[in-house]
Length: 242
Image 1 (cartoon, rainbow, N blue to C red):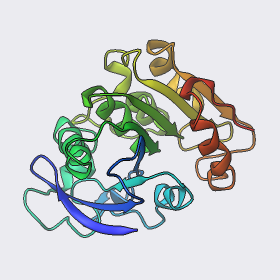
Image 2: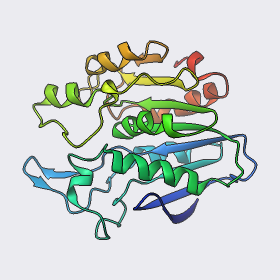
Image 3: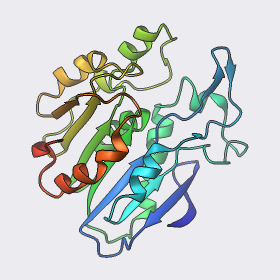
């Protein structure tokens, strides 16, 4: 993988690139989970970088040209301006974050690229995928994995404070029909119970949803990822998870 730092809208983003993006008809863009925004219930982390980046390991298994896009202030960039803890706590899905990540996607692709972009987001990265997708031109698809697509329902379920500075996908207009959606959930997920996503899915009735028996928040997405990727070559709304 090629490692670089790209500028978004006011922030820098660590990026890993695999494969040639120049003439690729399809590019997969991986978005990581929330990482470690809090050290404990009452102590904010000074560096929110994930300790076990599942989305990066998923990308490593992907034969397609791919981009792993880090969030603002993650991966050693937390000390730079204008980073502040709000951006990885209550504002982790804010317009400020979304705008910069959208700009970073465009910055990393060749200026004349017409590639179909598939945003693949794990956990909170899936939240960002649904928020970024409407602002990208061309053909766009969204695949989320164990994503907290209604952040209010998720916070209420756990007794957390709601993320008052963030946009909630369940409160946004439905994604345009041009954006193919697949949402993968683990039946045993206790971090993001599938029931907490009901309001988002009701607002997006065209989305394909697969609840996978025996899976939880972390298990066993790596094991079955090659099969999911193979099905992405067809249509996002026709994916079957074995």
